[in-house]
Length: 344
Ligand code: ADP
Image 1: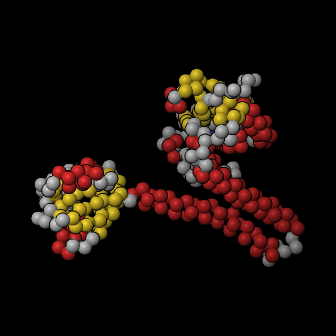
Image 2 (image 1 turned 90 degrees about the vertical axis):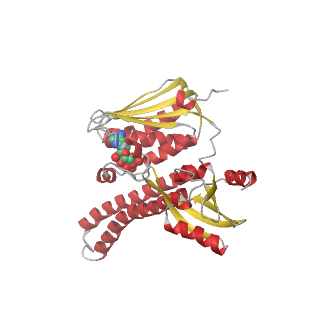
Image 3 (image 1 turned 45 degrees about the vertical axis):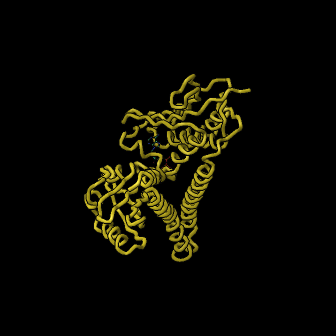
């Protein structure tokens, strides 16, 4: 084998091996050594690629000359990694390339899970609506009291579907804009004050105390005012929904001169409640779509399971961070750090 052949195998941008006519490994690049745990150079290929289907594909290519394909499943730190293997003859040797298809498979799985979740979320209120319509057209026809009561429930179910569709659209919009950082300068103080004022009534109804500590001076960020308002609303509403009965939600906004994760000054929005808090086990998963600690409670409170996913994506679009801290029994704090912008 010439140095040129070895250099070519090294240059292939995916795990690749060159197998000689005697089925020994002539060359293997760093990617192959990493996936297989050993480059296996000089040894029989079966020593590093132990799966029969792959060995058969290499053998078929060696003897038949045609391009062959197989699947290879590697154990990557306890998780299966899937590779599409292609074998092609190169001057009497067989070039084996392993294309990692795990990310594509994972995206596909996430898409399927997402569709299943959305269908499930929509099916529940839809089933309720159909049931009530049937009852109103049949046994309860003409019963004014029942009609009033059922219409009230139907209105609630329709509102639930509306909220879900609204949140799905918000999420898909912000995801589509992920790479476009907003350019407008927005005064976060004004946005937060607007959101707090708008939710005072909700807090009062829930018997909760909502208070905000905001400076009189503007806090500027480069942002999308509607999406920033959405962040505030989602976090405050969560505090009101899941905070303790008769508890409080405190909102603060400040500027930190150097926020390490953002490598510069940051505006920090904090929403803190004194509710039951969150078990640390759940915290890393809270921003996944439809992840809820208590589904029944969330639905009962009108939750869609998308609120924190929206917050995370909006923060990311603004090149910011969402930090969740909680000690069970001592409430929790949701902090959003956004790059602070100096006003011109
Ligand atoms: P939901 O529509 O269910 O409120 P979110 O994405 O906003 O969806 O929140 C996901 C889950 O995180 C909630 O279902 C709830 O279990 C938990 N959670 C969110 N905020 C709080 C909070 N302030 N206190 C306790 N649990 C919370």
